[in-house]
Length: 405
Image (tube, rainbow, N blue to C red; front, side, top):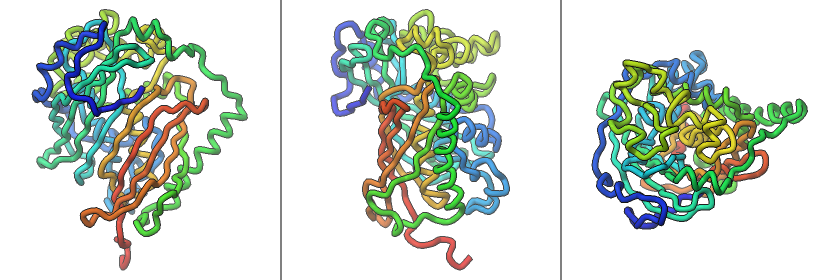
């Protein structure tokens, strides 16, 4: 599944996929989203644990005290956890009958402020565009984009996210059976031990750099980043991801993701439910929980994964985007700062699979006095299937900011 954004917004719908309701929403601001509570340190710790990001800067108080920040700060990927729909709401407006949705990609722009405990963000949303094209996965498929702007309590722009949602007809995806692998791969104890040993390379990269800067002059085109391995994924690990989003906690949203129900968006009756519905949350909150009912339960319940065209439980697109950002951040170190990123998600991460993340410096340049390195990132599973491709730009210090300390 790829996302080509070159075609004009509102392209005519292909036969069998009715997108006629979408045009009236494009460019129209939506109701903002806001969590009930400010960010807590344990929210940040829970996040990096769920995202498999072993950087002590974000969970170890003693390590963080010796850092440039003097305290635990959130990784840049944490911005998406401050939303009430992980960036999805503005990319799924309008009714498409008998449809479902998976993530197709994310573009990010970061403006400078870091998120720390005590911050409370408001998320402003606007649908951007959409197009319809033919895919091997589900035939006529709608690629829809929407923007989320993250603003903190000081009125500062933290980040902007442009999410791509892939909306398709459930019946068509089930008939095509592109992902027809109901059985999880088997891992021997020896292979699992090998995976754990390989995971050490990325951890070592973070530990060795520690609080030192990765200087621009020391980075060159063709440099390889240490690989990072996640998994084997499981229903338990995907559940841990889901629970790291504060929006999934009962009462966690002050302003919900949307005032429109999943059924009004066109989700099939079996998958619609009351996910994110604050009115139902007061009556029966279990019905609003995406782990149990509603559109998100396919991630964690194999029966419902198969209902929407997946062979078994599968990971979250927003989390895959976080893996990309964390991967480059861990290499760049605490003095590096991601300025923008663009990722396309091509295959889901399924239970039983591992995700292998690799990166290479594509170019270095100085632009408007900023010293930038562009990193190409690729995610593959154990069968060498591409899960995602991304390009991440990170600003690095030109001079040692710790000199003379």
